[in-house]
Length: 374
Image (tube, rainbow, N blue to C red):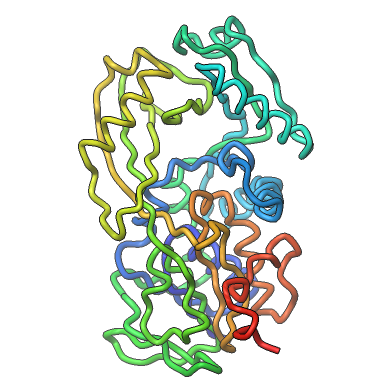
């Protein structure tokens, strides 16, 4: 069986790895360098409730199921890559600075506990004991120790190695010009090299998933780009134990005294520039949480385009055209969503049902009643 995966980000690479593990012959087609779009720009937070917020129950269940599988996923990928993949599970600290922040924090804490998460509540003194550099204006906070983070760039490199070890053909700088087939069946792809036939085509092109020529109308995913800007600060004086989530930004520790500050959420189309306004907002948010960041060096900045669907949930599973499989629209949680996404795509191609938590995210939810298949 031959499968093409359109898109070489973390989602596409995870799907390719999972299929190759089943013995499928997989080719990944990426329009640019592998993993250098939204995956490379990500902060790598694995926060099923803190990140997702108060969204639909089906989406929360999807995120929680992914987090529960992330340790196994990381170990299996690292094993095939013969590399270490560090999956941090020290929890995420969320802080409140105003009475309004406190009300939101209390609401989120109730939700996390209802979902079975262990949440530790901290007063102002306990906050400073946990994170000594935290602003003195912080009123209270919580730590959800069942959340974590990963370095997305290390993840991408590990996924590439894992795919290579299983014989996946990784073709970077290879944009798909058009899908081959019709409304009923997709039979392959066309690139500048010509036309190639595949048994299945997996659409995992992130924010560009809806832009591929030749997509049947009903299978064109309603995915749009949402820009997220991030800055990287360096300075040996400040050490963080874990990510800190505040009202205007979040801070994520990296090695060698680096702190990542993210992230804006902007509807700017496919414009992925870093802007002065975006950097200003992030630095102000960082300063409010950790005043000492004002003395850190601004080492780098970048922007990525998150793929957001119309309802901000992923689009997963079989397409309405035979031979097409969807794996896009993960918005802010593409890294978190890898375990279930990879299994859903592998199950579809095996002819099995996708995992129950992925079933609400079929593309046909965006069709009118009249458009849906009988």
